[in-house]
Image (cartoon, rainbow, N blue to C red; front, side, top):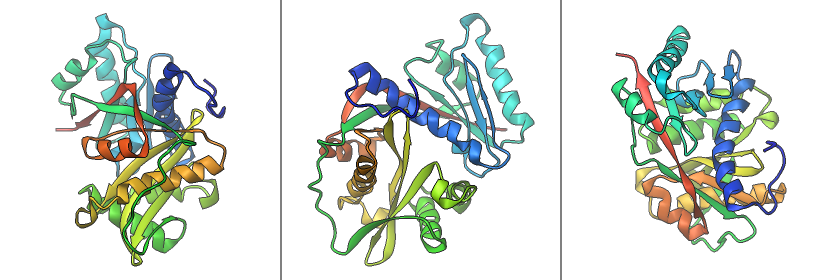
Length: 275
């Protein structure tokens, strides 16, 4: 699949593949970050950028031979250690080999959600736009100092993460002129106070939504749906026909109401931190 070819009438298998490939295109796009390294072969993808968020350090598209899997895992761990990465994510999908890779990762001290997050897609010409929102709510692209700081702070609060993890996304976004950023950060405001965030990334022929988060005091008000819908409507204006994402348990019902449906695959996410 050519990354820049917008999908028009994909088969079920093509849209399922696009959900994964959008994520991997996001990783490749991180090459715009200074000192980022990308290593991709037919059996593995690796990316590393020196930022304080493991999203910028990961292994993906793994196709290892069963008889050498432990050595290959050790080589990946060594690759990140040599770059002084404090941690990294290992992503698994329906094509990951061997099928029991997760068991080997857990033995190596990785931690993650064994169930995985289901891939979902929506036709952007059929998405449910009838979302009830709080009064005085608006969504804006984060493109200046104030909105980027707001985005950073809401990321930290919504995901109970260090502020540095949100700042990493801001730094990555500013590593190129803002108009050339590979992704777009969005902030949601109520009465001009920031309450929610999301990320839009176009790649692999579809539009991907990532990092939808709302501060605890403003949840269950339709804000997460709006932070998904409004960026995707912008992507539709740009000519995209399908939106994709991987859903957490918290977000699943929200995405279903928007018209997302499961595409039959899952993403697994496992973190390795050094002892």
